[in-house]
Length: 76
Image 1: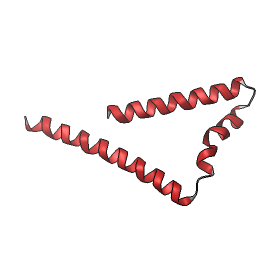
Image 2 (image 1 turned 90 degrees about the vertical axis):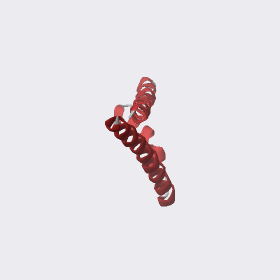
Image 3 (image 1 turned 30 degrees about the vertical axis):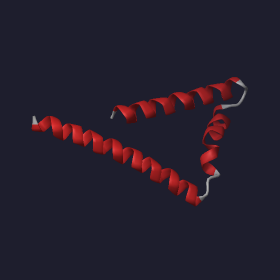
Image 4 (image 1 turned 90 degrees about the horizontal axis):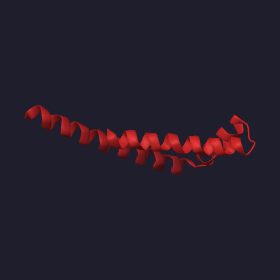
């Protein structure tokens, strides 16, 4: 769970930094958000499939490790 938490925290901080820099350069909030999510809007279907598949593998592995550790603590 720490891995997922750190990953989400880093993603949020980097998105916030990107939005903050865009706003300081004179863009309004909607333009800054558009610039932040634009790379995902131009992806093709196969690229989106690979992205979601890799995200699924990441979360599935994290959940498996969490459950394995939790089961080991219950057995003690």
